[in-house]
Length: 354
Image (cartoon, helix red, strand yellow):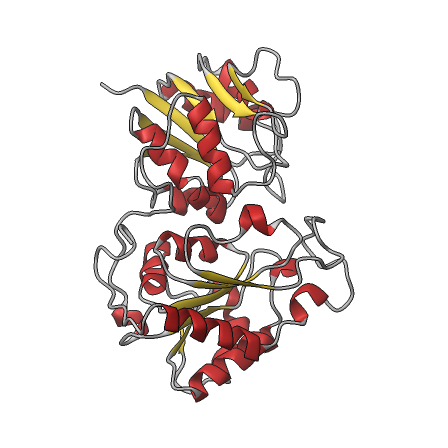
């Protein structure tokens, strides 16, 4: 029987999707128990190689944070003990520490723990990568995760691209292909292209004979309505999709226009080209869509660069507000043309292999 190995990625949907190649590397030799936060749980269930998912809200990750009291911490320790783990691989971003989770894993009796830590780990890590020394700082997040998994003894044996499990056919939601998806929302305001830009792009695409599908969560209906008003015949799917259904919608698109948010990584995981409206509050070299044709738009030298701000600290939001709808549409049509005019028909397995 394969050993049971915990792979931890405690933050959001996009972060969990970016961990997918590392999960597959571990799954080559072990049963993977995925530990993730509430915002990443649905994505964890989509990853090939995941046998079981444990969901826990980490007080040092979530905002707002749950209380770091004995009941909350003990609830995780008990589940970890019951999981019968032989070891754990903790995946973190450059600004996160694996040590709080490593402490809880030690209390739960996990005998071998791997992670990347700037801080001295003492007895908390058995395998330690030192960011900036034996782990490069400016590499894409999937490659960082793969480096941690490799150091733990789980080398990558495939192409290292993002992948998810087979997704449902989506034509009942979108109508016939081809179409271009616009996703106007973002996890935080600092990463969002103004909705007037999305509305202008939708109008221009419609005028050029492209079908437009607009996606978003149930809390983003005001954004999506503002976009579809400018594009007669556009389909508004705000709040209408489960995560697998959204993946099917993105897999059927010829191009996806989206900011730096979870659905961008979902689009990359199904192999769809992306126009990425990327705010430099986090580094593009780490967080841009991975492994698919793309056009990165936005001023990457703007004053907000590297600030990790949730709300834009610069009046006028210049890093993205200066991007025109015309530039976005030109980038989308360029990507579409580069595919040779391919018409993508959704299928039950779309997204698993592309």
